Length: 319
Image (cartoon, rainbow, N blue to C red; front, side):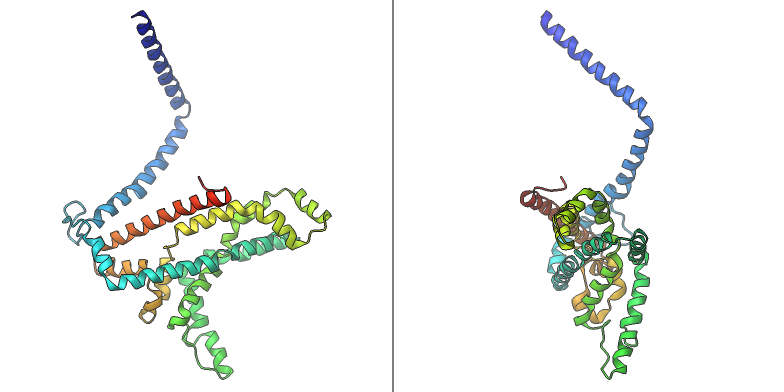
């Protein structure tokens, strides 16, 4: 009995000591905890509560005049309606195909551009190049659409040139054959410079002695890139690739909404624009929420899968 009492008293004293240390830490770092609580509160209010509300709406027949809580509960009916809709199959195909094209054609240009600018000898010229390639990122999609329209519309600059050399007009903006190319090309032009930032940050951390050793060994520019630069930026490449796969169903809704029109719905209508027309235009909020939840689930699965595959194949991963 004495031993049990001693053990119990020792456990109580250890617990009391832990509580005392916890109070000391809370008092010492109270400002940091206060700042962290604001950040946590922000994510709870603007991220996690909307997720819960979105899941709830996807299970209800939400109409104007109802609230989230008194709307009729329909269970999985909204999800059944989505997959029974004949348009949704083509919309999903367009979304996936456009996402794959964006990933294939838009992933590697920032890497190449970053390497080219990094190898510029003159510091002033290098900064000037970085500034120039960053500028398009700060243009809104409205401005980008205006530039594309000025060049590729029926009376645009390109068609005016074709007319002067005796060729017929090409309906770039309303043709199924060219619409995806306009989307991909304008997105690459807008984002390629901004996409180089992480690669620049990784390359500035490379030890200059590695480049000196390559020069002594007689390695040319291509060999230096393969032996020094690419291994150094591989973690950043994998990070961007995993995040890109996670966002593969997100196709710059604002861009597509501005660019597309009924004549190119066959190739340009994506999940986000379909939700915009059906969920908001036709006030079917439950269906719109259900599609958004399905997109989130697919993105989550892709992130987990790509991270696991990267860890098994290359030994590198985000977690």
